[in-house]
Length: 223
Length: 223
DNA sequence: GTCTTGATCTCGGCT
DNA sequence: AGCCGAGGTCAAGAC
Image (cartoon, rainbow over all chains, first blue to last red; front, side, top):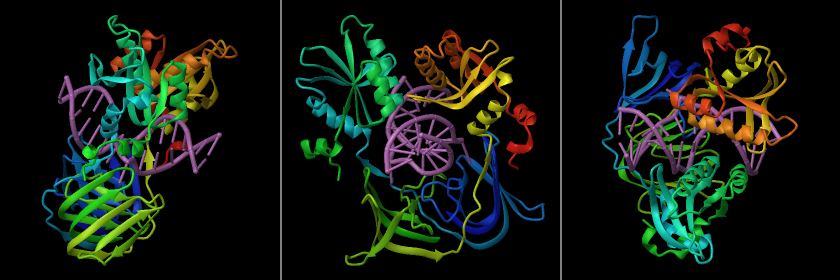
């Protein structure tokens, strides 16, 4: 990893066109060839960047050196260097990688163990019930034995309702399990999504992750 | 901006729980207090981070120093420092910021000024016409005064057709403006999206961004 | 390879 | 402050 602090201008021509006027910035050149340009704010997003695979070349033909970073598609990031304040190289090695806990997969696993949270007398038929257009998160039966398709999300938005609607359309064509009703379960459900779901006869259930975690054994607590 | 290369472990407890085993990484502390942890690959995304506003404190009570970065919500990023290879501080100043061109907002603005590109005699009623399920990009009237809902995209895919379909369903329930027809306008329209749109009676229009830019005053030419 | 979908999405805009 | 849509989304997994 090479760290450069330099006064520079940056131009990107690719999926869009973008320009950065002259300023002092951090230029980050990683071992995979990727380049990113950082200002002194925002933790997450660089001002501009080129993702790997890409290749960096220095053009010294002009008045000032220009770093030309190009990818396969011909998109270019051009960094014109005016002045270098710092330039260092560091050997980092391969990173062992991130271990995560608390994402949608966990939510689904927890809910599968407590489908009663969806309604009294609910029982689980299958997790990831496969259909021709993809897997339904949970397939359940209600108190009366009728089939219920459940879509689980961390954040319930319109896309999720559309997804569940597609599953319901398909499942309801299968005379063996029809009629199938739908439940949209999420930690948070956006008003627009709720409106659309309700309009389509889909019931909305808000989930409390911490509570569900509390109900559960230690099995899903990874560390 | 402070640049640190260090052997470290990282733990995040917040919206999720995450852990990074010991390895040599770049720690980036920016002027706004934000902290990010980078491995030697991926231009765009840090391994872990804390977005501003947040505050960093060093806990030296234990065997090893721990940087505790915390935000208002109580989310914590804890970096345990095992060994520091490099540590430097740089004054960057405020960045003049990115100038972008060619995004959907420009397309919509340009098209709003030239709705005649959608059809002879078309007039604009409103940009971002608000409905209960979101804003319609452009609401127009055709030559005969009938209402037309327009969805503008850079890349026209099936999602966009679904979006427009929802708007049309809703708008057509409003007897004051029904019947409402639809136009799907994009720089590029995927064959599948075109098929679906046509099947639903939605007209497709391909936009030429450079041409529209040429028609326009210099107002939207940013550089 | 292509496609789908989640994300500590981030970010900007508007109500 | 909350909601909503766009993103050079990115990135991981499925097919």
